[in-house]
Amino acid sequence: MPGMGSAKYTELGAFLRSRRARIRPADVGLAHGPRRRVPGLRREEVAQLAGASADYYNELERGAGSQPSEQMIAALARALRLTADERDYLYRLAGRPVPVHGGPASHVHPGMLDLLTRLPSTPAQVITDLHVTLVQNRPAVALLGDHSGLRGARASFVHRWFTEPEARQLYPEADHPAQSRAFVADLRAAAARRDAKDTEARSMISSLLAASPEFAALWADHDVAFRRDDRKRLVHPALGLIEVNCLNLFSEDGRQRLLWFTPAAGTDSAGLLDLLAVLGTQEVTGPAR
Image (cartoon, rainbow, N blue to C red):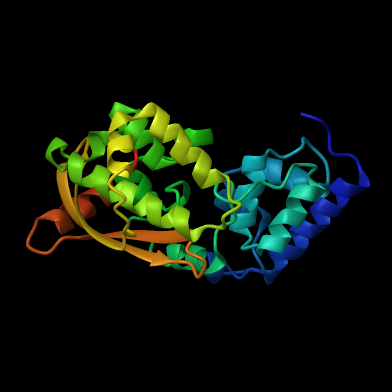
């Protein structure tokens, strides 16, 4: 990794400090705590929220150390609740290309990120309209698996669903046909909503048409329907079948969705979700959503 000795990296450190100072602990789901001498977040708190070591983050604020990765910049932007313009500025200060919309490093809608923070015990995550997971809370990781390491076409769960058999292990086999049809109809609706010049959705559809006869057959049916509310049966590797309601909140442009999962009425799923919170992520080995 190249060093961070230039004036631009010094500005990066100053920018991080200024954004940290304006965030209240309650804004990101942290307790205010006693003896807080600074109005904003502590350095170690930002590091914790971004999944970095305190020493590494301290180096960034000093304008020293190694160049942050694109994934780390995205994590810092979320931890500090940066606007889209502020996030792009942070990428440029770090000498990294600003990512295109739709990938795992996409900027998360601030309102959705705030709501996610306020759902500490409910499995929830923010995804794109192409089903790329942008951020998950801990209960979502425990329920659905960790999506943070997925890149490229594999970052989309729809792409994995039609190209990787193991991606379907989260659903009972009897539910696979209905899920396939729902994913294709949702993808058609999402692609139609995008600008005609958009290449991301078009590329994904072309790839799936070539890779999956099942997708091609369903695409030819021309079904179109956004997934707004679902009752799902999920197969957890440790707890077995969990029946949940999956609710969706769409951003204004439709490019992002906040998903959260509640126990289905008339089932024992509430107790299973409570147990899942106790188990945490240690038992989770399966794929996502």
